[in-house]
Length: 194
Image 1 (cartoon, rainbow, N blue to C red):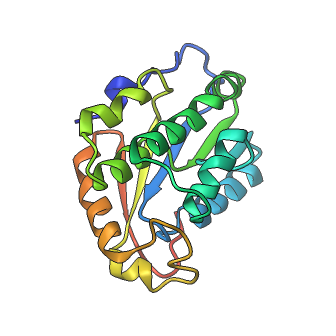
Image 2: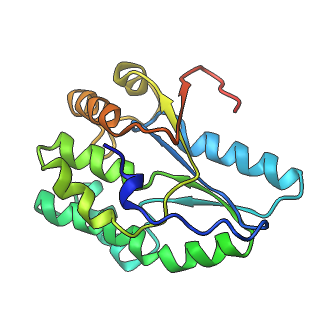
Image 3: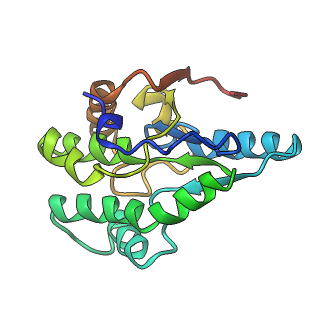
């Protein structure tokens, strides 16, 4: 099932429209590093490009998510799912404005993560997709494919609530259910250069 079917495509009538490129993958798969490298490369070519991350921990909703992820607060699984979605909705209008103005957005996690992680906790697949309806559909999803065991070997693993090997195995299975035609798979390597 495709999440992008439930997302809103941004009109591509304007040739200067930026692209929405989403990086997805397990925790510690290299999403942040690869997004940063791509942004630097595109900026070097003179493109208008920005790196965004979800959750955006700078917003009020993002701060609640941050407290939950670092085990400083407890929330029901349904509640935290809505907060992750609300965090994306907080930024939707700004995202649309930037894309229409020609800025390309490289996004570290998006709707797919929300659904993969929440369904791995046992929530209903269709229920988890519902709050994403109306968000901007990505032009491309780059999935960084790494085994949960390899990700667990990377520095800093285990510092957040979801960084547990068995849970990450479930998340990997649920990501596979979300894959659609907008996805490009990138197999993990030690020093990946996109």
